[in-house]
Image (cartoon, rainbow, N blue to C red):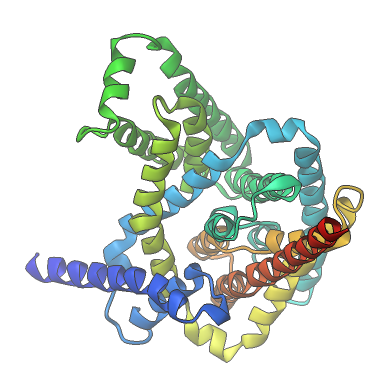
Length: 399
């Protein structure tokens, strides 16, 4: 027991150290414009069992899962359901369906020549978008403003939620019919949770929650974490992936949270991005199969290019009447950024024995590479567009 505790504390300290150093490293090398997420993953590789062996993924598995939950909770929390009644939501759905059709065709070719064994997980992986991963990058660079911001949020939400639903139906432990039934049950539970606050509105319970949200009781934050863990538990009990429960928890939270919403936003960011989410990314780096990537780098490059083709190219066509070409190109790189669901799909494929270990490693590696490269390109395009607008504005002022 003492040795296990020592190893667990050592692993947790190594992870916390990587998380603390990540923003310092990014700040010291501003020209590289490396997202913190990439530093966290690379740091996880370094402290993990395949390099220095300072930390064991098994020791922090629970914290890592909670971090994954927080990542998708915040993604769901950012989602405005009203977007899906607007043009941004409709175009996002069309673009994802086009990506799914393209993924089926291309992965079918790879399966026919023996490069892919797990057809469904790989095809779904190519249609994902890492909205939860992109959010801190987009916030830091003020890229959620204006028309483009609504298209990014809608496209990213569809790129996370639709694959999650597909995972529940096609890859759940209960089979397709029961998977769909389980999905509906969990959705109903989430809906009921979203309606519960109305029962106590204006009563003593709401008064207690409102008065305690800024005190040591931290009522709203405690109930938020409780709701997250409840939906994670329910999703897991029904054989669904925990990311579904977390995403639904975020959607529910937007309608559920009492009191000062801005204060709750800050607290969720502090708890999620301050501790749990970095643990997930560091643990992802620790679990990455570096040997497979080194031995077969071509697979990683192939999946990296497929992410851009499958998720990116439809965006250029679908949004041609909604956005000018530079912003469409910017959206291509943002939508093609993927990682958390790649990790989840790889783990599912390995657990079922359907996915080749080298493909699982290559998929996650391609996700890491996409997070490293694609957002940086999008940020550079956005800055260039902003600079052009500033020049035009200055010229108009002089005239």
